[in-house]
Image: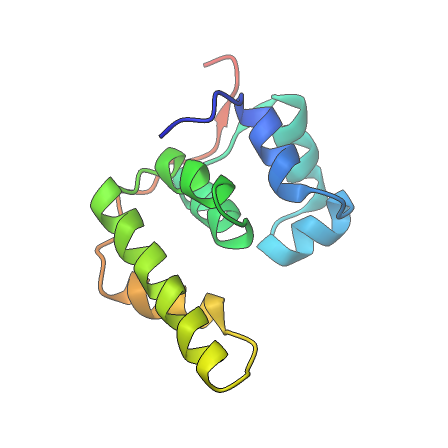
Length: 122
């Protein structure tokens, strides 16, 4: 599954209507990093791609997680965990706690080797 968006287009799509500052705070990053990603000056690390995926809706979350190095199997498990959280919340008329469901799932999955932020020209 591939959307055909560049890194910069995907970051902008995930950010949506939020300001760079709001988005940076959501991800726990500096605002200047969001600007660097959107200008293509820096390519997000695998950890940042996973954070972007966690903050995005379907299907953007899948594309971000793929760029973060997660396998199809892991992404499928994450999607199942999110679906289960939604179903459980709907059964009790609650708002689902998707970040908590994703975090529980992540604890069961070994993290890929970290990749540091890279300048776009490397």
